[in-house]
Length: 113
Length: 111
Image 1 (cartoon, rainbow over the protein chains, first blue to last red):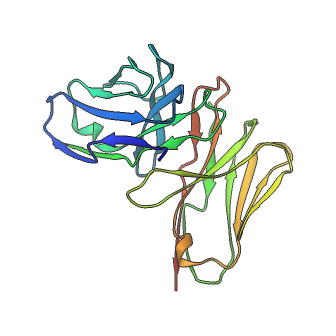
Image 2: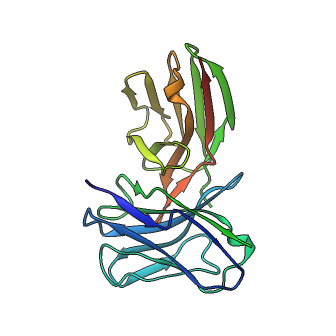
C-alpha cells in the first residue's frame, strides 16, 4: 500500500530535550516536505527537499532541522524544543516536485511542556 | 506573498442542504487543489483544477476554477454526515517549491 508513515503519532516532551520525528514514504517520490498545522494559522511549510541531499527552508524553519540521506526518509529534528513548537506536524511527499498530488502522513501531535 | 483566503471558516448545516465554500486570492495560480482532512488524519486530495473556468464534478461535489485563475469554489449538493471534515484549498507558490494552503473551512453536517 502506497503511504507516508510518521512516527510517533503522539509525543509529549520537555523543553530543551532533543527529539526526532521520522517520516518514510514507499512511493519513490523525489519531493518531501514538513508542515505544521496550528488553529487559526492553517498548514505552514517548515522545510522541503527536492531530492536526496537537497533541502531548503520553508516559511517557518526556525528551531527545526531536516536531513535527506535516503530518498524514502525525511526526518524532522528539534534540537532544543520550546513550548511554541507545540503543534500538529505533517510530512508529505509527491512525485517530480510540487506540481502533483501531495500525499500526507497521519500526523504527529507534539506537546512541549 | 501569495495568500489563499477561504470562507466561511465554519459551516454547520443539516443533512440534505447545499453549501458553497470559497477560496480567493489576489494572485494568479497555475492550478488549485482541494483537500479534505478528517480528524486524526492527514489531508487527502479531492481534485486539481488547472484551466481558468474549469468545472469538475466528483459525485455531489462540484469544483470551479475562476476565469482569471485567482479563485475557486467547492459546492456540495445534498450534504451528508459523511461530508463532515476540514476542506482546504491549496496552490503552488511561484517558485514551485511549496503548496500554499488556505486556513480551511470546517464543515459539520448533522442528520
